[in-house]
Length: 65
Image 1 (cartoon, helix red, strand yellow):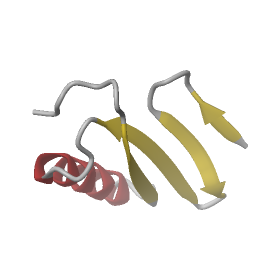
Image 2 (cartoon, helix red, strand yellow):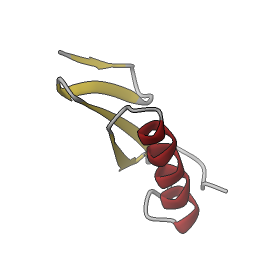
Image 3 (cartoon, rainbow, N blue to C red):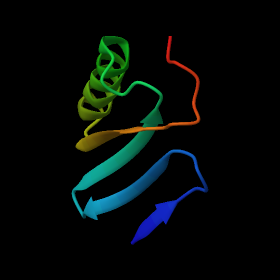
């Protein structure tokens, strides 16, 4: 089962026991974006939700701060 929103973030179940969340960012390789994604992944893991975070380039987005 796959669900996506038009042009925005998306979430889909890759495996029954792992959630994959896709997030678009203007600069997905930026240290601040990577740190934020790691923090989100760790918080979800502590709640017992194994999660994979996929960051993608969002060309029309303004630079991340």
